[in-house]
Length: 385
Image (tube, rainbow, N blue to C red; front, side, top):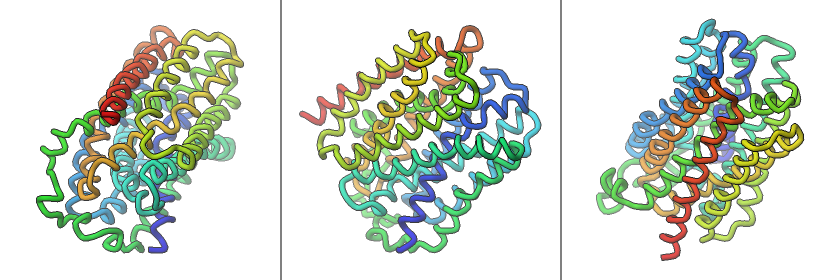
């Protein structure tokens, strides 16, 4: 079990890299393949769309056959996706690489989030925010690593180097005794009393509230990951500083998660989601209306601070509500519902940005933040009741 925490951290770094990868290589990939913003939006949407059925299916596999084969399989698929992206010479093979990237990412994320409850003992909100700090660290380091590598080698070699944390995750998973993590029921031999089944999950209001919260939150994070550099360039920030500010976004993102892990009192999770949702509306509105170069730079960092704790806190509410025996399926459903939002909004923003600008397209992200506030308000009322 000495490898459990290193494996979990490696998996979190790899999945953090996965979510930041498209935003980090977008400009270089667009130049190589001759893509416009609509096609970039299509790639981001494919990432979210693929995630939906994969997360749903992997949730069953995780609960029924165990975490180890899922962890190893996800690492292999994600590594293969980087090879496909690295060797793609036209748009369609690159799109296939994004599809594989999403499938591998979704497979890993389904396992690594519940594993954080074992790797970082404590309350759910502590474990998930600390785990997502490492996820954010992977996302933060990715644009820095990409910028460093692209100054020295081509995009192909850059993507191949990024396979290291992915393959390390799978290698460490081979040495972990997953059967020792919890009673056998968690690894697929649950009694009927402990396992409500998929229909039971679907009938549970908390499942839908958490899923809808992610539905409105996920596209905001995807939008920032994919279009931060473009938004900054529209506001007269050069490509180099724009890439640095994308890293700053992820740094603020992970720092706010670390603070939340150590300071948020148990029981106040729903209230935090509501408060942060309201601030999200204000940040997006300022991005749409602002015309100042300096304000644009500050708002990117502010978005990272506000966005950071939302996802792990939603996940903490979900995993704290359900028994561990169904965590795989609960996480699968959560991302299945949330993935619908992840798919739709980037596609709409990409299409709208092609006619106007990315900054104007952020109006749609502001609307998504309003939706998050509505769901968070219901969540607060339910928890209080």
